[in-house]
Length: 132
Image (cartoon, rainbow, N blue to C red; front, side):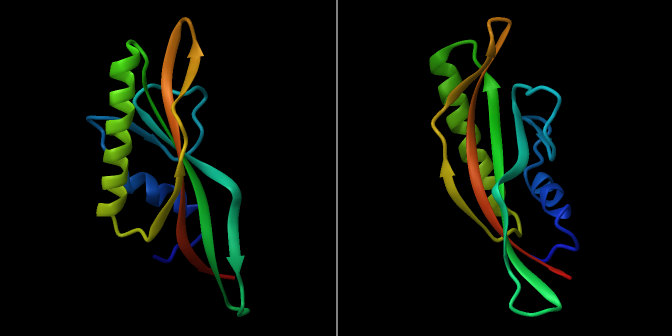
């Protein structure tokens, strides 16, 4: 899939992951993480360019998807985050994106005693090109 600009990649992935009755999708880091959300940010490295020609830049964009769910009960939260990972994978598979899931982190607890969440990070790569 070709993108007009590198900024369009995050919004394209966000559109592919849209699932408003199940989770919120942020194509930018929110002020604070919210439970039941998918947060799309750049991974490191952000982009791996392959500019063998002068007119186009073929690149691999590296994104990090942070998935969060409530942590009321450890067992239920673990099942919820596993189901969420599967649904995100399915949403990506059903989209027109050309992507590769590089890795998925082990679940991590976020927050404090007032509000804890369980999260995982999915690192994905997607092909991009744009005119220089």
